[in-house]
Length: 483
Image 1 (cartoon, rainbow, N blue to C red):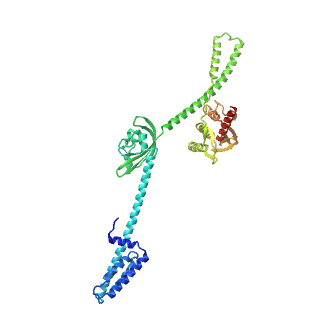
Image 2: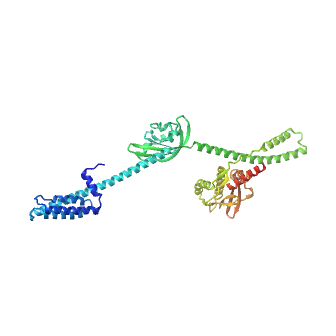
Image 3: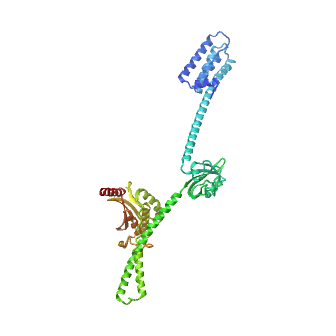
């Protein structure tokens, strides 16, 4: 910014040292007074006091400037050639004082206003720099985000979109601008953006999306509406969750297959027992000889043998997808799943879980199913209990980590029949505990029952991950040694 000579001089004076400026002011006043006293001319030199007043205005306040202006007025009156009298002297001195003080006051206000303007300008520049930095960071965040982010106007036309949005919808960079979002997210196009003039929307939904090549995918969409000077707008963030859906369905399928194999094995076991009893009766009747040549009796024997062969089929249980898992993280997920429903049933849940839990060896999906089954059993057992409390505790026992589920329910009347399928009087088919133990044993764990004075406890035993890996390493070493 360029300044004129007068402005530059005033700014130079304003930036000067206060002590140096005051010395200059009083030095100038002394020199002007000396010149005015020795000058042999009728021309008064009092106007020269304007210059020290300009200097003084840069470091003095209004009252101090008034004192300096009064001194300059007295010196001017003393050394001028005019005769002082009451009629003309008072008016002349008032004019002198007004001139000196007015110039000083003008310079003082000019410099103060200038300083205030500079400070305000600096504040605006700092805010502008901060705003530009925030915008740059926001642009970098949006452009580098793996989630698709875009904005749309009230008509549903896309205004801006990041690179991830173009990749998600299968388009070249920049091709989304101006296109209707209904072509890619039909459900999102049904959002009434115009309603944002009355109330802003902030929500999430799951819907189908379409790519430019016609491929369909499942997406989670977080969107909000907002108002601008150009009208209502919609901002959305989209994530493709098709892989999550496929993985979830595959895990569910594996869980169903595993459960089905165990159930079929249990059914066939019972069928073999029944077939064995029928075969004994058939043999007894055959030895009696009464039905020796009866074709229906012989056909019955054939059917018994056929049924035994079918029941003897080996349904090999699939190997569990056991890995080392973080039990603390899994228990946090369990807490999120079971606490709301238990609270609705007026069941108090006490978590006596250690802060630091070792990793365990298990199949995550099967383990969460076991925990859910045990918590649901406890909730049913406490349905009519006066005190309803489920305590979930953990402790390390040998090479296992034990998760204990203790409830204050009615207990177990026949504990010896636990973990057996098709129990009379059990909930549904009585397969919950049977399947839970079967799941646990696929990866070296187990489920045990312990009686309580008031309620029941079920203990889930999980092998520690490092002990399983250690056994695996020892086995590998023994095999290598044998080779």
